[in-house]
Image (cartoon, rainbow, N blue to C red):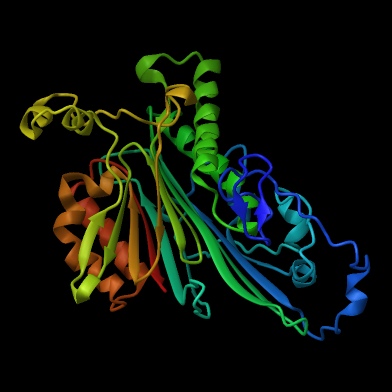
Length: 402
């Protein structure tokens, strides 16, 4: 185990970053290992490692990190990583991801996908093992302007990476990791869509280094979300935006590394999951809206009294309006032990209990793999437009089979 010099927590020997605080871990190399370690290893005839990364986002303009240029499937050849891992060799700082993952060959968006309803999906198989690997993952995401809006202030990103290491050095590893982000911007034209884009891009950029080993720990996740908040906050301050004119955004985030998973949220964008404990399917809302209604319930008010207030659905937490010192994101960690379907969605989809009332007809067939995920997602967005339609709708589906 390697002890983090910052928080003093133990981390597996192969970790380059502390899973608890995110600090770079210095790994000591045995002095009896030759500098030219490749001379002591058998020759590898075929490429050892194949990594696939898929970037998918909505069409919202993105700054400062332009995900639009990275859309599609990116196949990356990573050279000699297995050799370096076999000798527990310290690699370069992982925030220089391009040094580890090259060359990059991005593909363009398929012509049959409209820019306003961008969809990304991937199906892959990973050998399952006792160490908590995922056998199958598929995912898809889509955003829709809705039927009463002339601007889409939602934004989302789905980034997934698989890694395989096989070679004569007898090192083998198959792992997968990904981050799925959904933001519902607020503030009107030239505000909400900017806030959601800033949040998505900032979080994606900060997540990339942690894909070397694992998902970030709770402390580091708060820092990542806090930095995204501060970027929007500074823009509000620089633009001298006051009160209701201040831009902001909600956040729903799911990140996974093999069977380890974290859910984080700010505001009223939600994360649901469908499971089948004891063969009986069930729906569970993993997030709790940061709204006045729930705050009043926590202070002992009756539900009827809290709901009667005109500000019952006003947000108590959002990215951007206030300084990070006032931000309190909710973060929870889980371990995948059974087939699970996750749904991330903006309130344009989940308003009026649509998910709770229609999950058996619209989510359960996806969970049971009775319907193509893309078709299921389209049906879900169409349901949202029929039942709500007053707001932008965005949804991300992730099906995990351990």
